[in-house]
Image 1 (spheres, rainbow, N blue to C red):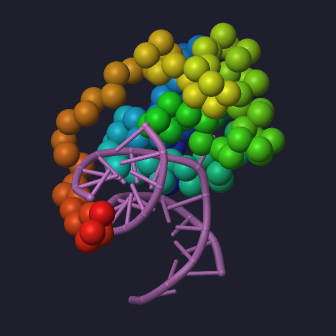
Image 2 (cartoon, rainbow, N blue to C red):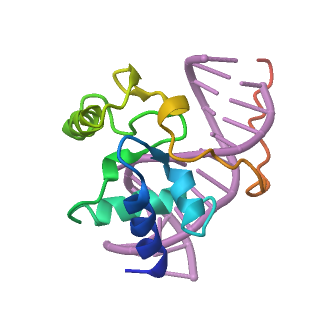
Length: 121
DNA sequence: AAGATGACTAGGT
DNA sequence: GACCTAGCCATCT
């Protein structure tokens, strides 16, 4: 367990019932903005921690990150419904109502550049 | 040390 | 909007 992992777990534990947070948000609160993928890894490796509200973590688009056909998807959806969380569609949650905290969109993470040449669009 | 993986994301087309 | 891509990070091969 790295310190980052511990903070991530602790942060997820703070998400109140009936609310959700995004991967990037968790990463930022854990001290590493931009480490959304790191959060994913941690969730996978800690998938046995009892009482961890992993289902309250969704992606930035407000959707359950699992494939619709997976059992994980159904399980997460069921857990969220149990908390009276509203879905706009089977996999989309109403972030306006359930997002834990407002996403602080500052600190341009890192220079992103160079899209695709795509000549002749 | 270099490459691959994953429940990701911001930006450009 | 939808689609694509290059960055992200921790961890394992």
